[in-house]
Length: 456
Image 1 (spheres, one colour):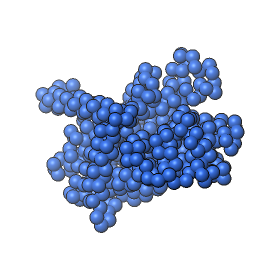
Image 2 (cartoon, rainbow, N blue to C red):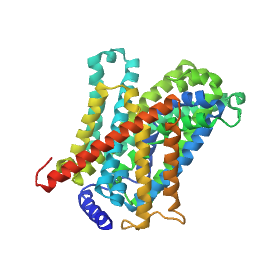
Image 3 (cartoon, helix red, strand yellow):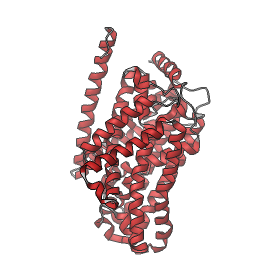
Image 4 (cartoon, rainbow, N blue to C red):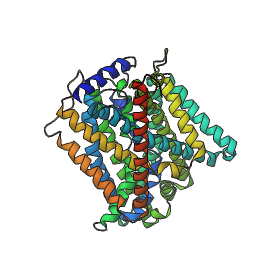
C-alpha cells in the first residue's frame, strides 16, 4: 500500500505541475465560505426553530464542534497531500485508487445533485422578479446561461474563477450583514430566553438538517493542486472559514428568532426575509430575497470553480479516459472536466426538482467525510508529506478517530429516528450504497478491460 501511495503521488504531481499555483489564504478561505454559506441558511433557521425553539443555537454549536473535528482532519491531510482532487486525493493516497474512486463517486453524487438543485432555486428566484422567465423555454434558457457564463469564466483560468468567487462572496454576504447589523437592535430578549435542555431526538434531527449548511469545505479544497504553499494555506483558510461561518450562522439564528419569536417556524420558505420585514419593511424583505438569489448563484460559482477538478483528477489517475485531464493550452485550466461536469449538472437541473436533488447531500457527504477522516489517520501514521513541513501538533492522531466516531453517531442516530429526517437518512444510505456498488463494478470492469489492452 505504501509503494502504491508513492506511485500515485508521483504520477499525480507530474500532471498537476501543468496547473498554476495561484490560490492563497484569502482566495481559498473565500472559496470555502462561499461553498459553505449557500441558499440553505436562508431557509434552515425556520426548520431548526420548529424543532428546538429558542434552543436552536445549540444545534449550530453541535454542528460547529463536529466540523472542527472534520476540518482538523482535512487540514492535516491537505498539508500532506497537495494534489488536485482534495478529499478524493487524500483518500486515494492513503488507501489506493479503488477506495479513492469510491470517495470521488460519493462526492460527485452530492456535488452534482446539490448544484443542480441550487441552480433551480436561483433561476426560480430570478423568475419571481422577472415573470417571463417562468415560461418553460425561458426557464431552461436561463439555466443554460447561468452555467454557460460560469464555464466561460472558469475555463479562462483559476485566477479568474477565484476572483469571481471572491466577488460573489462579498455580494451575497452584504444582505446578510445588513440583516444582522440592523436586526440585532430589534431582538426581543424574551424570544431567545433559554428554554432548558432540548429533547435529544429533536436535537439530533436538527443537527443532521444543519449539516447541509455547514458542509462545503470539501468543495473549496478540490483545487489543492493550484494552492500556493498548501501546508500553510489549507489549515489557515479552513479554520478561518469555519470560524467565520459559525459566527454568521449563530447570529442569523439569534436575530431571526429574536425578532419573530415563535412565528419563525411558520415561515419555512423565507424566514430571514420575513424577519427582515419586521424591522426594515418591504425593502428588507426584498433585500433578503435578493440575497437568497445571490447566495444560490454564489454557491454555483464556487462549485463550478472546484468540483470539475474531481473529474480532472479521475482522468489524471486513469479511472476515466485521459482526455478528461486535458489542460487548456492557453489558459492552463482543466477545460474538458469543466464542460463535462457542467453538462451533467445542466441535465439534472432541467429534469429534477430541488427537493429531489438535495435529499442525498448530507448522507453522501458524511459517508465521504468518514473515508477522508480515516485516511487522515493513515497519512499521519505513514508520515506522508509534501516538500514543505506538514500541519502537525501533539495528539493530532486522535482527531481522525473522534471524527469517525462523530460521523457514525450522527448517521446512526438519525437513521433510527422515526421522523421524516430519519426516513430521508435511511433513503440516503440506501442510495449511497447503490452508488458504491455501481462505482465498484465500473472500476473493476475498467481494470479488467485495461489489463486486456482494451478501453472500456
